[in-house]
Structure formats: C-alpha cells, structure tokens
Image (cartoon, rainbow over all chains, first blue to last red; front, top):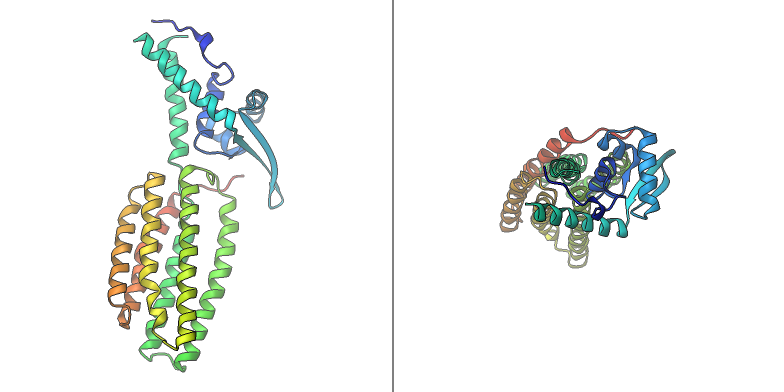
Length: 100
Length: 206
C-alpha cells in the first residue's frame, strides 16, 4: 500500500466527519443543524465540536434564528470555506495522481 | 494514511455532496395547488362562455376571477408557511426551482396585468384570451429549467408538453374549447408532476 504525505492535506477539513460536513455544505448551504446532523449521522455534541473547529478556521459560520417560534440553527459554508474545499479537493486529486 | 483510506473518505464525501445535489424538490404542493386551481378556473371560464352558468357574463367573470385571486393569495401564503419547515430548502435544485418559478410568476403577472388593462382601455373582451398560451409556454420554460438544474430530468417531459399546449393555445386562443384544453393541460403539466414531487418530499425538520 502506498503512503501519502498527509501534511499537505488541510487538517481542518480532513477528519471524516468534517469532510462530510464540508461535502454536504458544498451543495446545501445554509443547512439546518438538525438536517446536517441527520446527514452525517452523528450526535449533537459531536457535530457541535467539529463545527466549532470549522468555524474557528472561518470555513463555516453559524446563524441562530427562529422559524416561527422554534429556534433554528443554520450552518453556512463561507467563501473561505468554499475556497478551502476546492483547494482540498485539488490537493487530494494531485496526491492521488502522483501516487499512480 | 493509505490510498485506500483516502479513496474511502472521498467516496463518503461524494455521497453526501450528491445527496445535496439531488435533494428532493419542494415545489410539489405549489404545483398541485396551481394545477388544480387553474383547472377549475379554466373549466368555469369555458362554462360561462358556453352560457352554462345562470349569471350575466360580466358578473360571472368577475366572481370567477375575484374568487381565483382570493384562493390564489390564501393558498400561496399557506403553502409558503408549509414549505418553510421542510429540509433541503437551500439545496441547489430547490433554490433553482424557487428562482425559476419566482421569475415565471413575475412574467405571468406582467402578461395578466397587460391583457386586463388592454381590455379595460380598448373594450376588447377577447384580450384576456392572450394570457393562457404564453402562460403555458412560461410553465414549460420553468419546468425544463427546474429539471436541468435539479437533475430530475423526468420533469422535462412535462415541460415540453406544456410548451406544446402553449403553442396550441396561442393558435386557438379565441375558441371556447381552448379553455377546456387549458383546464386539462393544467392538471397534466402542473398537478401531475406536483403530486409526484409531493410523494418524494421529505418530512418536516423536528
């Protein structure tokens, strides 16, 4: 099995759960927190932890609002987040090409 | 990290991205509502033109289209409230659907308003007959656009059918039976795909 130089990969994105969050947000943004939780199949706490890391890197932004009288948390993919996502995919693609 | 692990992660990411890309459309209830409402209104218009309703033409048309406007307003308000609670509203397909139908509604309003004002100014009572042909062409454009952008290509067939009905209605705009064609056309190209979309609509976010 070939090894990769994983230091070249954006660690903020490359956790399996964060990868899933970024992938989903790349086509659905903003996504309600509960919808995102269902899609990546995790718990409230775990999703919050990973979203905090992405938020610290300014890849996502969290908006707290109301839908009628119900509180609604929306997760937005930011411009920096989309740029980082595309850069991440390009990096992965070139790593895979180099390994072939 | 191995190549296999990386490929597995990418496959997972791809699955999630595609779920968003192909998220169910949320306009099924709107399409069904407008399809049925238009079908009833066009059929009633035909019945009035054929003299089947016991009111003077002018009063019957006024009651019909005033009732249509009230039902349309209440229905649209209620459907908008209902759709707000659905997941996937910001998926690409749903956003495209909303943008296309908003544009279509504005185009339709311009045609309706222009035709009615022309009737009032010129006294030409056939002026509103010019509404439904372009309306079906616009429905067709919105359906075809929605199909392309959402990846739900089966909707295209309804779009092409709508454009064909629009062509026929432009050709035979002043025939009374054209309203029956418009009535059945509304059920065919709006209500039918609307019901199909409703069946695939996700449940509300809890």
